[in-house]
Image (cartoon, rainbow over all chains, first blue to last red; front, side, top):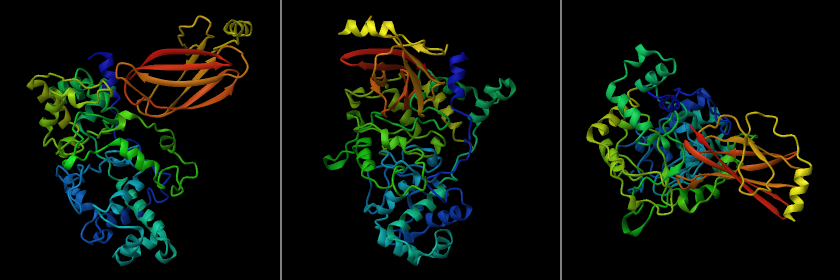
Amino acid sequence: MTDAEIEKILSHGPWPPDATHDPSNRVSGDPVAIALGEMLFNDTTLSAGRDMSCATCHQPDQQFADGLPRAIGQKRLDRNTQSLWNAHLNRWFGWSGDTDNLWAQNLTPLFNADEMALDPESLQSGVAKSQNLASYQRVFGPLDAQSPMDTSVNVSKALAAYLETLTTGRTSFDSFRDALATRDQAAMADYPEAALRGLRLFVGHGNCATCHSGPRFSNGEFHDAGVPYFLEHGRVDAGRHGGLQTLMSSPFTLDGAYSDDPDKTGAWAVRSVRFQHSDFGTFRVPSLRRVTLTAPYMHDGSLPDLRAVLNHYNHIDMERLHADGEAILRPLSLRDDDLNDLAAFLYTLSDD
Amino acid sequence: MLVALFLMFASSVWACPDNQRAVELISADANAPPVFVDMDKVPVSAPFSVFIQVCAESGPIKLDFDADMPTHQHGMNYTPQITDLGDGEFQASGVVFHMPGAWRLRVKVTAGSARFDYSTEISVQ
């Protein structure tokens, strides 16, 4: 391996990151709030019909996703359900980044008429009837002393405290990466040869690490992957363009009054993010940790398996990319053996 | 006017930079005063600061900073905040290079009616 290859590979670690608490969430890291959050995550009283919980779509035994191309709430939704593993490490949340923090993101499905279909009043009413009321009041105090919106934000923060615990473990890639860092040849030899070839393609000719960078294998930003953003009946999914519009009208950002952080840590992003013409139809780069366990893929779930994703990038239709957008993607024209090697590498991100 | 400004720059050049790590930016304008940039190791997709030193005394100076990836045909996703630290030094904070690769740093110095454009390219890994 060249020094440049080694530097690129080392940039994908170490893993896991140090545990940190979210200063915008006063119950972040609180064991009682974490336990409450897990109970609320599975609580169907947090939906208008009392028939859906967070776990309905984010199923723990499905990697906190649902295995469907597009989520089903009160109706079929426009996007694929993303896994919640490592979600707390994001800068932006959801496929379009319409929130800048984890607790605010939890309010999106709660208040979406096509998902949990609540409003602050009905959410507070749900908490009052919930078997988790006593636990809620232990963390946040008397319910009847709170406004409906304050209760809603409290629920979202308890959920966030739980979701912050969902960090994936160390994989065989991480063992190889750390062995490479110390030049431990014996430990490096344990890494499968096909995965190593795939890793070198990933950081080299495949150009995958341009967007799937860092220890999470995502730069956390938004790109056009050449997946159509047209929906049925002539509708389009505006992606990041729409996400930014929602973000800017939200009172729940890190710069807003519902943040518990007087220093507004992290608010620099919402204050300085740029609106760009090229945002239209772009979506957040997903992490690749546990990627082989979270099919189907892409923002609309249109690619059923990993091979379909690799084939998509191998023969990408340049006509589907913004003419005036980024010039990053090009057909890779890899052989089947190369694609097999890339898949072998991706499996080593999913074997924790 | 440009000549007058150049003479003013040339006659009162500050001793800068004193940091061996600083990189001089390139301007196509032969009259442009030297400008240097300095930064720690650049992280990918995380905010950092660029320190910019304009090596001339000319009264009030306005400085703009931006960056792009020419081969990718995109710029930054965030607007950096520029702080005038005095003595010709500026800090661009909240700079985010969201991809590894070749980034072009672009600086514009405005002094009165004179404007000078600078750039340099760095590799981010």
